[in-house]
Amino acid sequence: MSSYILSLPKVQAPSWFVPNIELKSDVEIVILDDDSGIHATWVDKLNKLEINKTNIKVNHISNPDNLSKWINNNPDYDKKNVAYLFDYELIGFKKSGLDLIEKYKLPKAILVTSHYEEDKIQVKCKELGVKLIPKMIAGLVPIKITASEVKTESTKIIYDALYLDDDTYLRGGWEKAAKNRGVKLITISKPSEFYQYEKNLSKDSTGIYLDSNLVEGEIKGEEFAVELYKLGYKKISMASGYGQKYFSHVGPWLECTGKDSPWEEEW
Image 1 (tube, rainbow, N blue to C red):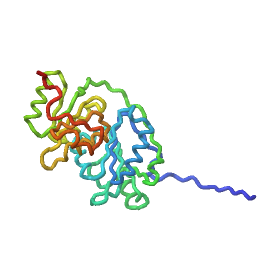
Image 2 (spheres, rainbow, N blue to C red):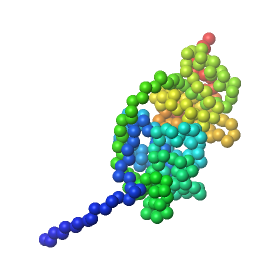
Image 3 (cartoon, helix red, strand yellow):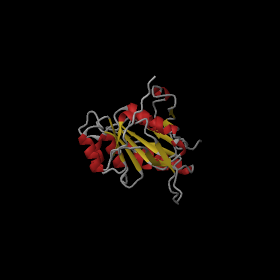
Image 4 (cartoon, rainbow, N blue to C red):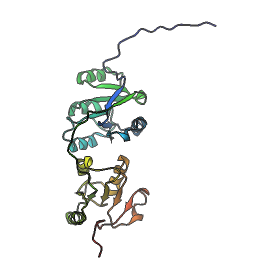
């Protein structure tokens, strides 16, 4: 039997190469990709690292329009501790992930793409200081989480409940009832306002109450409920007069509590 020795010269890795991803334990991650399979890959990797035991928050975004909404809801995005994992080709949109990284001047951005061998992409990545991961090995790149520096902060408010309704009168009634019962409640009129209060909400304990029919142009409350459920919020209810059966198609986790505030005085 013959044996062979294969000797390969050691070469320097390309400037765009990502040997591993290092994250602080309080980082916010923004994943932009139109492929649900890639989102699932990142979810699987991060869950294995038990990020639920850290302060890491993950935002799953599928298109440039929703990225724009996230940017608008996070005006300090360029100063926050955020890691960006962007696809290059976004089907149906003219701007690529690399275009968006350049447009918003995103720090700590990594391009995850099947087009990693294209010279124009490598050149642009080098110009912008963007690292690059071939999409085919996205699931293999090691991720390391390190502890963040401890910062002293004043105690932040965690709301007991959040109520979404476009009716000013109803919101006022809920606010009055909550105040009388000592409940910390925040009310909003449209889904996009939700994200500015996320740091003051608990996924485990904050009760979220959603009206179904909102103003024209907004998604239905039950559709927004699905988005929140995917983000990990556990206490979601429909504050609607339609009744429980109307929302049975959404899932057994979604309750319907009716239009009345849970804190109305009983007579």
